[in-house]
Image 1 (cartoon, helix red, strand yellow):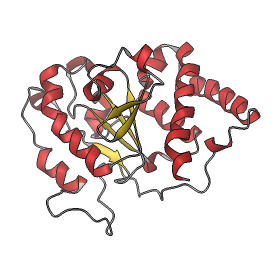
Image 2 (cartoon, one colour):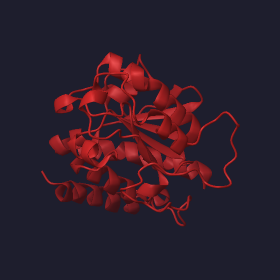
Image 3 (cartoon, one colour):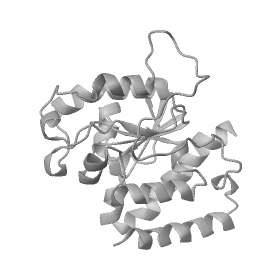
Image 4 (cartoon, helix red, strand yellow):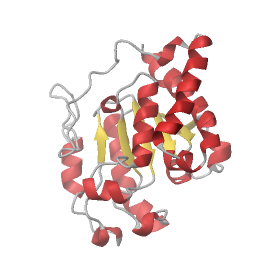
Length: 240
């Protein structure tokens, strides 16, 4: 099923939500000014007035430190090191499992069909994609889009940890089993974990289905939208 057909399900949900007076789903003005987006520069610079400790790198510096990484076998087969994209101080951070073919080719996370669906679901909440931050657990594409293994996750874990610390989001949304268990090892499977609030350090974590799963299982779209309702409430309503 195509992305546009799935969006029709979301539009039906939005209409119902509006009828139920869920006004927080359409936030105006946008809480964070969007950054200029460019597919050639997926790693944003930190805002000029951002204060940070002298020993803390910016996201750009972190990218430069690791973009030639060869610490696991994935480095030898990648086309691009897919670091992350979005606002460097986004209140909302999405974490997926790893790059696919489109992401590997373009060097940016969530740009294929699943990424298109994620973008439109974010917009359906009244938020622009540049106002959130999107990353993956591993930064290089696993062969044939398989799940990353324990070694690969462990090698990328310090990079993801630093991304989280630098961005310091109000809410982390994990997309699927792999990122959920990378942050919360004892979490149940995604069908039980989704929609629940977990704690990772000082950060709240909300697991939900991966958009690729929604493309294969249309019946789960309505369930996923319930989680997106919580995202808008937990993250943006609290800072409005």
